[in-house]
Image 1 (cartoon, rainbow, N blue to C red):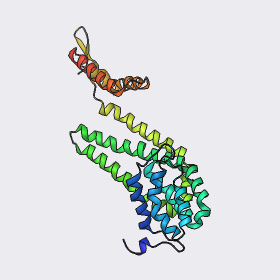
Image 2 (image 1 turned 120 degrees about the vertical axis):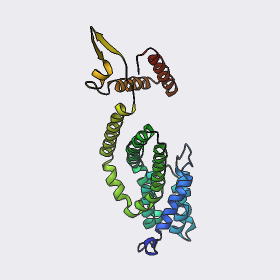
Image 3 (image 1 turned 30 degrees about the vertical axis):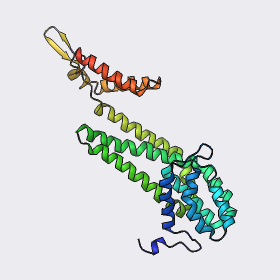
Image 4 (image 1 turned 90 degrees about the vertical axis):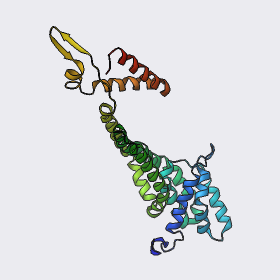
Length: 274
C-alpha cells in the first residue's frame, strides 16, 4: 500500500491502518460479551488505540471516551464496523463534546445495521452459496462444503476489518440512508432466499415410488406417468411440507432425522418408495 493511501485527511489523525487495526482487534475480541452491555467490551478493545491517538495527551478525555465506548452496544458483528467507524469520525471532530452524539448514533442505528447485515449475511449469501455447495455435494464433490465455509469465513472477516474504514469515510450519512431502506432490503432478501430454497426442494430431495395401478392389461406407473409428467416434484414437496409442519410443532431435529430414516426404511421394504 502506498503512503498516500494511509495518510489522514486534513484535520484528521486516524489513518487507514488505524482503522484496519480496529477491524483486526474487533475480529479477535468480538466474543467479548456480557449480559449488561452486550458487545461493549469488544468495542473498547477494538477502539482503544484509535481513541488514544485521537485524544493524544488528553488523558481525561481518553478515559471519558473509553467509558463511553463501554456503554451498551449490540449489532451484527460483521457489519458493526460501519457504525463504529462512523462513530470514530464523529468523535475525531468533536472529541468529548461529541460523546453523546456517538452513543446516540450507535443506539439509534444498531438495529437497522443489524437488519441489513442479517439479510445479507444470514439469508442471501448462505442461500446462494449453500445451494451451490449442495449441488456439488450431490455430485460427490466435497469441495462444495469447503468452498462454502471458506467463502463465508473470508467475507465475514473481510467485512469485520474493512467496514471500519468505509464507515469512517462515509460517516453516518450512508448508514442513515441504508437504514431507510432496511425494510425493503430485508423483504427482498427473504423473497430471494425462499425462492432459492423452493427451487432446491424438487431437485435436492430425491423421493420416488415404484407403485403402479393395473387395470386389465394396462399398467399405470405413478412415478413415470403422474409424478414425473403431471405433478412434477409432488413427493418431495409433500415430504417438505410434512417436515416443516412438524418443526412448527417444536419436534426436535434429531427426532425428525431418525423419523425420516425409519419411514424411508419401512416404505422401501414394502415397496412404497423406490
